[in-house]
Length: 102
Image 1 (cartoon, rainbow, N blue to C red):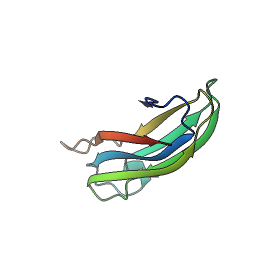
Image 2: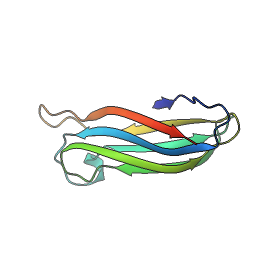
Image 3: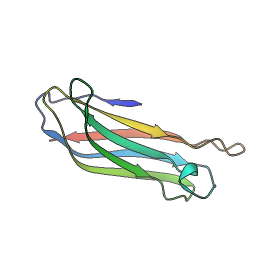
Image 4: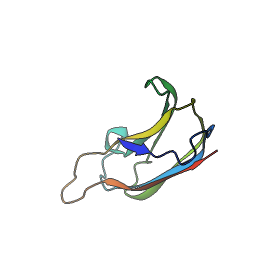
């Protein structure tokens, strides 16, 4: 889980976000892809919006893009990512993530 720090407390949501990942597992199918979901939750933890993205199966660096996710007053955002198993000496992972608030 990667938390998103809210720079603007009264922001109405996220205009756009990116997660840069490296998919080094050559396996075929979503089990072998890097998958990240951007979640928006209320202050009490109730899920109000969710956007999943995943790599396309081709090994290498990829950017997962997110747009227009709403926010609740005093709510929070976080990414949940699934990284495929190591394939030989190759390891997949998250390189960076960024968020632009509304």
